[in-house]
Image (tube, rainbow, N blue to C red; front, side, top):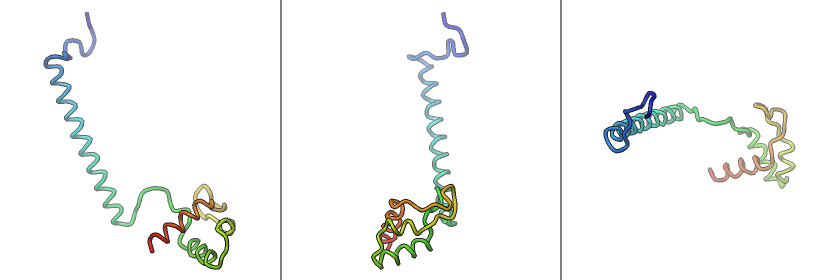
Length: 111
């Protein structure tokens, strides 16, 4: 014989199945509402200029300097050694070559 909080409530073939189905629908509706409001908040924040995620590693000044050096023929690994990160946990370090290539590619794709 079963005892406990749900004893006699859940009957997989009867009203118990209906109860759990209704609860599942209510939870799914609540989840959809929360997701919708979260997305609206992200769109509103983006309209104000606040985009989520980590701050950019390579700022616009560093990128301009890197593009000038690259146009002069300097290899990207040497350019990365001349740049210095100013903020975050990697402050006073050089950006990785991969990060610099990625930032340069993003600028070229945007133009």
